[in-house]
Image (cartoon, rainbow, N blue to C red; front, side):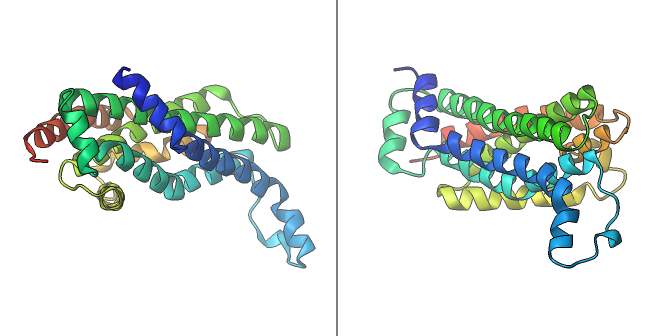
Amino acid sequence: MSLWRLEWLRLVRTQRLAILGAVYGAFALLGPLFVRYLPELLDALGEEAAVLPEMTPPDAITQYVVNMQQIGLLVVAFVGAAALAIDADFEISVFFRSRTTVKEIVKTRFVMTSLAVSGAFVFGSVIAYVLTGILLEWLDVWPMVVGVLLQCVYLVFAVAVIALVASALRKTVAVALVSVGALVVLGLASLVTPLAPWMPSDLLGALDRLIRGGRFEYWRAVITAVAATGLLLVFAVHRLDRREV
């Protein structure tokens, strides 16, 4: 059995793929429903809906994106850590290391995990887009497509960060939590104005800005994210290859 098929089976049989799909799918449903029915909900509770700003179709997508950046990213961190913490279990680590190279293990798990988390986000985005169109108004499709692709670039970068952390730590929970912390710190670094356009975390707001009519100004963040992803993976493989089991 090839490593690729084995990793696919691990994603399916451990229900990691189902968890990703369920989390992103649920957020995609809640966003448009929240925006569409919030005034009615407030009226039912006896609250005054007029005090709220007018909710627009882009707000439905924004709700989905915000949830993705919070709980969704935490789920990604644990799914990624479960795959890339290759030395978390001694017996399994010895089994794989004795049959193939660390480079092949990391490459396979990185690619499959990246496809899984990106696919889950695309899945949720399609649901959010269609439901927003049905309940509110149809948004222009191309800004949506470009924004989703940019978010996927960030998710792949996030998986590379998890791989690097896994090269320093062994336990799955520790890898996941430290990875989230590292991504949060990188996000805070983007608050520094001169650095912001170059930070991968700038891609997190791309979808929201583009569907609201913003211009495409993300080439620098994409270049940084792609270059950093490659460097992080090279460094992670080097450290894992040299680490004693």
